[in-house]
Amino acid sequence: MKANVGGIDRVLRIVAGLALIAWVLLANGPAWAWIGVVPLATGLISFCGLYTILGINTCKTK
Image 1 (cartoon, helix red, strand yellow):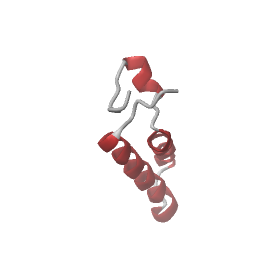
Image 2 (cartoon, helix red, strand yellow):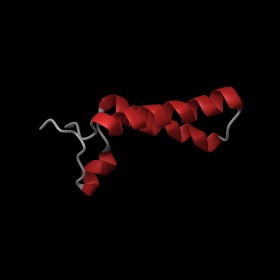
Image 3 (spheres, helix red, strand yellow):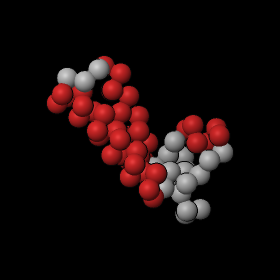
């Protein structure tokens, strides 16, 4: 797995994922908000399978 998520994209994914998970845990949000695990994980490991399929790469390092 080569990194394909970089910089601002990575930060936004982590923040969005944490926000969705916090919404579920702290404010009794809807069950679908657990989807926040996906952007959190992809942000932490800097790899997105969908980006690979679509040929997108926001990571500047080769």
